[in-house]
Image (cartoon, rainbow, N blue to C red; front, top):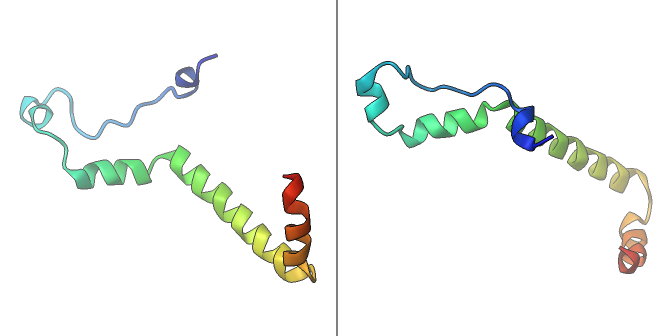
Length: 76
């Protein structure tokens, strides 16, 4: 299974039958909006945010977390 087969829908920003709109280049703003509203990007941001929150919670909940990480770092 190739990674491209997992994505079945495409985001279409313009009407492909309109020749005037299809002929012009998309503005950078349109491309940014399309990138930020993509479901894969939203999923990646959520996973990173959860990891950051968990790291902060563990670092505040466990005393001497920094010293423990320094001692474990050579094995990573």
